[in-house]
Every structure is written in C-alpha cells, then in structure tokens.
Image 1 (tube, helix red, strand yellow):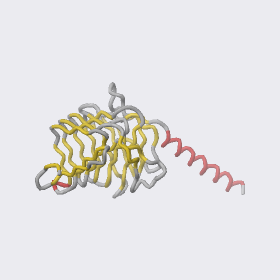
Image 2 (cartoon, helix red, strand yellow; image 1 turned 135 degrees about the vertical axis):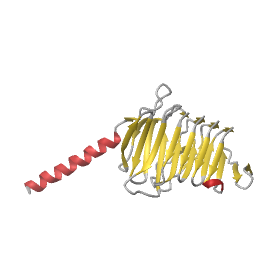
Image 3 (tube, rainbow, N blue to C red; image 1 turned 90 degrees about the vertical axis):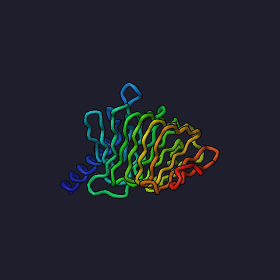
Image 4 (spheres, rainbow, N blue to C red; image 1 turned 30 degrees about the vertical axis):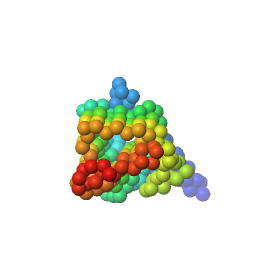
Length: 220
C-alpha cells in the first residue's frame, strides 16, 4: 500500500506539473515592439513550441484552444501551426485577450490542421501579410462561447465586436474561409479558397453575408 501511495503521489505530481506547463505564459518572441505574441494558456493537446530565426512553430496533437494575451506578427516573421505525431483533422482555436491583432508577416497551418480559427473581439489587421492553411480558416471578432468547449465545432457570440481589415495581403486557404467582423475592409488582397473552388464568406455584424463566386471571383 505504501508503494502504491508513492506511485499515486508521483502520478498526481506529474499531472499537476503538466498542467503547470500548459497554463504558464509562453512568449513566442514574435511581434516585438508591436504588442508581442504571448500565449496566456493552452490545453493538453499543445505539444510545445519550436523557435527559429524570426519564426515560431506551435505543435499540436489534437483539437486545441490557444488563449493569447496578445497575438501580433511583424514583417518578415512567421508563425506556424503544426499538427504532429500523425494528427489529422484537428481544429486549432486561437482567442486573443488584449488589443488588436496586427499581422504583417506570415501565418501557416500544415495539412493536419483541418481548421484554423483566430477570434479577437478587439479587431484583426492583416497588412502585407501572407496567410496559408491546408484546411479551412476562420477569422472573427466574435467572442468565443466558453460554455461550448467542443473544439471540433466551437461556437461564438452572435455579435461581432471589432473590425477586420485585410490589405495588400495574400490568402491561400486549402478549404473554405469565413471572415466575420463588425466592419470589414478588404483592399488589394488575393483570397483563394481550395484552389478557386472553395467558399469565401464575408459576414458583417448586421447579418449581411457576402459570398465570393469562384467562377467570377466577385461578391454576390
């Protein structure tokens, strides 16, 4: 019994340590001078981060929620979201607590990430950015509904709060893309979904939904 208690205590301590690892703030080193890119907390499917020169790669082994204090990427910086250990079809939800997200660099998601979501009620700006995902993508200024923690299909508040601005950027999405904001401004930007046959939706706070017809590349 004594040995069992020791083993149980060791398991409990290991579990607590693991929770501490994923709940501590993590600075990606990106966005310096522009608000930074600091993770507030993650869940157990976060498999760690690898830093490179002007880059950070976040690794995931399943559906995951990344809660950021701030999320900004400077010019010539790269933020990667990678499914690892053979994970496929996963959703990575990113919620941002403080300030607008200013993306001047590059965001990528590999083939194991079936949906990449960025939710920042404070607003999102892409300026001269490159956004590339193998699967679906969603950029929204709605608030994540924490009562539904089904990360495979997360829900959000009906009201979009901040604005979404995308200019001089290049979006290449392997699936469909939904962009939802209180106000929307898209200028001099190429948005391609599923090689031109996917859905591109822009939805404003008044419920107006704009669909880009792949055959004409025009809003309908």
